[in-house]
Length: 269
Image (tube, rainbow, N blue to C red):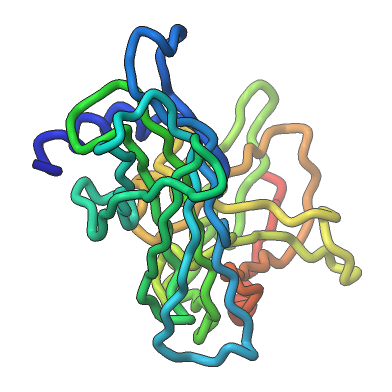
């Protein structure tokens, strides 16, 4: 039943902006059109952030879920469904119970078994019942684990020398870095590029961000292939210079790879 109902539902909602741990209600303009209905989803805790002091271990985290429900019959109640990393099938589901202190408040508790070094994303969906309907609330729980390994730059590539083109012409120069992370490619936060001048200073106060998006702006040829790219335009306004290209990467825990350096010279024709 879940597959036939929730697959199209999540496909539609997948493009919506979801605020972590907060209510993201999608409902009719007139609540009277559909009854019962739910709103104001709250989850505690609304995120999982593990630190080095937690170590590397299996753990179970318990959550409290609350939602406002209206126009429910005495024998009916909202249901919650848990999804992991965008999966279409829920790995856990359950019924919420009416609070003894509030006639419109429904509550439930659930637990997630995980590992402190995992980086995960969970979606929580609450519906008025187990049948299909256009009224529901949805929230996201983001888990940031303890990184075990820093990212590693396997190789970098850029031309050693580029000739300054004649007036009216330009040359596109591509810089690439192949980066991997044993803890998972999703754990890579950013891959950076900068240039060191002959006097030891850096060309840019803020490093250039390399992307693995397959986009025209970055010049990346293929998305999600672990090759991060940035491109620069060289034209007749450039002056000769001998610089060093500097590459490095960081993960979501702030661990940094080694720095790789290659020569990059701009020369006259």
